[in-house]
Image (tube, rainbow, N blue to C red; front, side, top):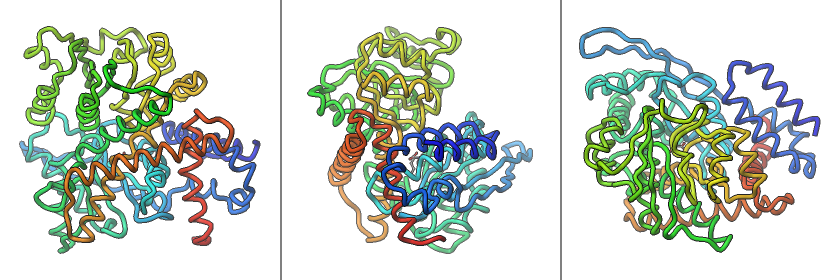
Length: 450
Ligand code: GLU
């Protein structure tokens, strides 16, 4: 359809340096074509031209001092992309690779992901090119305070509610919240992923990883399969990976890999979860330390990966859980996975597969859950945290986990029913994009040209 192509070309022309944003937008827009053809109202209201433009983007300076007293300057971002369905909602990423295009792609994906949860949340994202690696606790605190000293004026419990993402976990949310509370003189649920001592929700920490495994379970159930007794590969070793591994064990599967930016672990007997938590959550050290306690496991540094590939995807498996970062799985990796018998990919990370890899999964009709559907459990549980804050109550772990499982089931059912409605039942990329888009688009039409 020429019209959708024209909008993509317009984006390529006007956002030339924002490769990740263009990649994310092109995937969504191209898969909307059957919807656009069937319902001319979206074109009449210029919804796709409107939805690719953020409602507001904030770029700010963050200056802070390290432990030696030296001054550092970083870029701070918050993108408030779409508020048709609720307050802007989405995490903050602190990583040296962060730039305007990365934040924009993440914010764009968040619109549709949040819509898919079925909850009242709009799409936003933020972060900084600050590198938390190797920083002391005090440096992390000073950076978070400096970051919040600007961000606080733009956010609020009914306006914009940030949370964590790569490089932002419980510790950072604590420092950010403390500074917000001081500056705004208001104790409110302005951030999610908070500590259980002061307004957090049980199961929020676990939610993204657990959700990605639930999503795989529902995809597989529909095909008469289960994860029980199956070898699974997981990339990354952050919050998403750790709780993906935990839930895989709970469902009787065998997770055998994890990785960080330096290399990967292959532990044939199954990843030692307690050890992984100790190394990554408590000691905050690199993954090569793992083999000191588990000499039978194999550590491969990135330099040992086959040229142009990610070593994790070369390990034969039944199901794969990309849980590290964008574009960590390319066409060659996808072909290797399929050749080794992998029939299920559930994405815990945001946009971990390149467009070519996505095409291979879709064409081969494997059980492929794209990130915006499969990893929506994190943000969905953030919204459950907001609900608890607003009603000044706390739910039990079991209550939150049961709601999470139900939300993941609804997302799967909605995405697969939508895929079937538009003629390609196994194509959850199309199903998730159309289902997520349709709700936001209809809300935008009903709310008028604002
Ligand atoms: N950063 C997570 C995501 O990509 C969670 C966002 C949130 O909880 O607001 O969805």
